[in-house]
Length: 424
Image 1 (cartoon, rainbow, N blue to C red):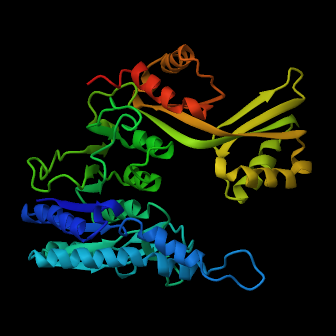
Image 2 (cartoon, helix red, strand yellow):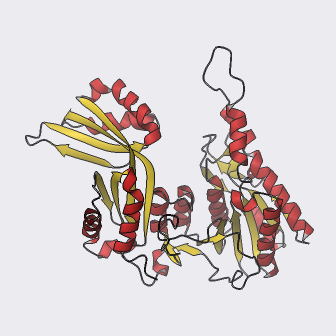
């Protein structure tokens, strides 16, 4: 017998038929004798609809800006998960399973006070553990918790993944199964490279890089939590037949296991290729090369909640001037340029230039720590295809390359092949 947390995303619970299918997956684990808790997202598209309702409320006369209280925003938007959890509990009960729905505030999942983007501080898992021991399935609404102001708080987009991993850690689960519309983590996006392979295992660090660099399989914060608390996490498909052979395998269910790298016996040099579209590059020309100039640039950008990624600095021959180039999401270019303009005198740059429509392609693998020449292979492969590199950043387990948008798919396929990831 094991203790399992199962999480089902929006596409998995998109309608009543799919909720019934989810109930069959849960029943399979209950019938095998496992203690089970389930975390659910809102039905597909429902969160966007709820957000739209809030943002399209009639505006105050004479104002062009939307206004809403973030606490009431959370009260509205969190209702999607409340509906799903109740419906799944009803479906399970109809199958003869002892199930009860729970909202985030009932456990409680305690969060900070950042309504709309709250972070989990603590979960009291004692009541769920007791009920699981009595054979009851807890169906928990994901994406939400209870803030210090005693009001419901939501965790931001993808928060249900984070809820599931946090609950798994709190109840000391043997594993956390994340059910989604794909059957695992692939070496790259199969829509771009049909030869992409599903990975049997991937290390927490690799998955964290994949998620933060463009892979949409898991939310970044959920991977961070899983890594910190060593929660073994399986990415699985909810669309496979719940009763198919192997679906109930306790140690090796179909999908991809995200785990500590010690569990991976044979580590590949490169595990996967990720990409992120809609990147933009901003260059500040002829800055004075003096202490504090970086803080003067990136401090105001951080205060404006603009995410800066790749940073490249070029210093002039005499060391008196420097150029600073960095990337931001394309949607933040205008905002970033406005912030920089407002701080131009303090920063001391001559001119700011920007370029949108770029793509960041990343090569990821824990095996890179012990192998030389990985970067050179990437540069050589891209050069042979005539792909120009605009910027490069590296870490122990990743190389990120900034290129023109039209070359994105060619670059992904080229690098996937260059590292032999298309070979079974």
